[in-house]
Amino acid sequence: MNELVRRWEAVAAALDSDDKDARLRTVQSWIEEWDGRFWSSDFSGFERIYASDFVGHTRIPMIGTSSIHGPQGFVKMREEVSEAASRFWFDVREVRLGPEGRFAGIGRLKARGRYSGLMLQAPLAVVWRVRDGMLVEAAAYLNPRRAVRELEAVAVG
Image (cartoon, rainbow, N blue to C red; front, side):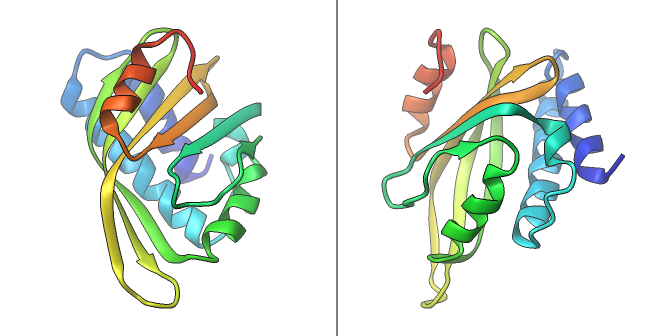
């Protein structure tokens, strides 16, 4: 089992815990590993975290990426994002639980412009939905309040 999968399994276990600090630490650890693999184009383990019917949406108007379909959709996303950014990462500062296997990470997006080298920072929240231990849906938002509303709604996206 690779490190990304190990960290995801820790997240899945922490989502069932009442320990908010443990949830935050495990999500931060998973995202840190995810970011490193994404930017090095190492997608090994993604197929053990993301269901084959996974769909990811961005609600971020300045990032012109298409929806992500299945674990292999991240390869295409990597190509699209690298047109504008040399690097981005998600600094998760809070994790909230929702109904029906949903949870949200709330924090800051940090990105470095590919050509300008300028740093961009903005609020970011991602709402994920888990089914049978695997991610089946995700949506990214620049407005954390909107993400929380989506988290608490019946359906994401």
